[in-house]
Image 1 (cartoon, rainbow, N blue to C red):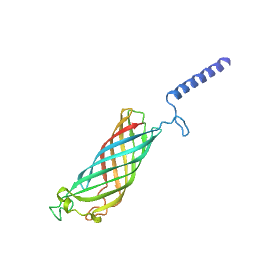
Image 2: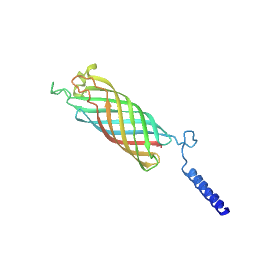
Image 3: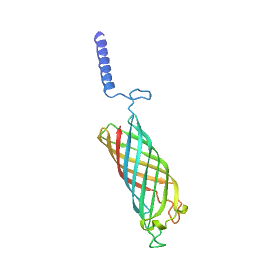
Image 4: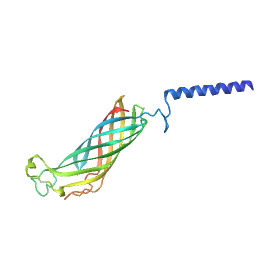
Length: 207
């Protein structure tokens, strides 16, 4: 009986020592824990998409606060431009572009952030604007017209494969899909902005 009691106490001691060592090296965060690791980052993004079946380029920026390494919330947006023979079927001499931007609130769950390669799921909820503008040859004759511009809502979920390059820099490959409300511009498909984005994101900060 004494031997069994001694073995039980030795076992409990070993478990307590192991638990203490684990707690010191990799503490478990709770809602009210004092050891929650918060941080933040700023990011630049460069993406390719298609608008009206034409190549388009997007450049964006965002800033986010990171809660306990695993969830980020922030604000950001991007601008885009697209070379389009917009009313070419009406006038072959008129060569216009579609340009605009959108931005809003970013929500970003991050899975296994301490691993050198991991995944995050940023979601953008926001608003944007788009206009039909002439190229440089026609600026002198251009007059703003509400029928050639519109405001829209946007919802853009994405997946980012992140690489921890250094303690304060991450590089991510990103793919997402852009959902928008209907675009109301003359002779324009209302779904013209819906589509896939593929790009790179450079993040700098405390992760």
